[in-house]
Image (cartoon, rainbow, N blue to C red):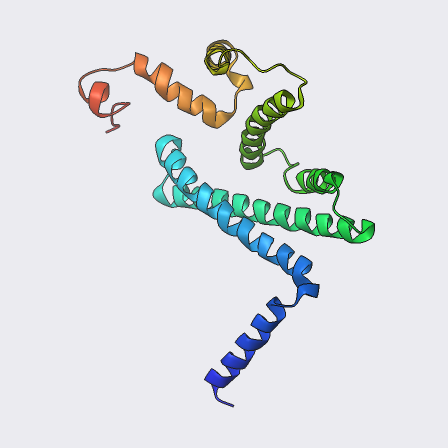
Length: 211
């Protein structure tokens, strides 16, 4: 059998397998792993590239190594979480015969503990990102369910004022409590702008070039 014929047969077999409904739950777990890996790499790589070249010192090789490591960690963790979450969700549904809201919560709790429970920079950023989103979502849900009355005026200006007031107070007087990447960003914005020597490090560069 020619190589092309073998490939066509293999491709037909795989496509036929993918159409089998009885394997859909298991295949969805596999594709979830794939999507987690791809999405994690797509959103971490550009972020790591910018942050590394803005704030990290070291050789070009060290910087690219740091970018690759951050991208790999984010991609791997997200892929493993999606795999765990969808797998446990499918298992619970199979055991109880129907989907329940608790399935999603419990599966995600286990996945979060196993995958994102390690306290490192990548997991910290992801968890804090999600925390801000769920606080917004829970506030909206509380209004929808009637637990909190609908605000008569848009509360967003007050929210923005409190967020910026608190974060700058923490930065100026308790900076060690903030995440290192946020400290670096705020140092660049608010403290580095207090120092210059001539026009070169006033407008062109942030700091004078070392000779």
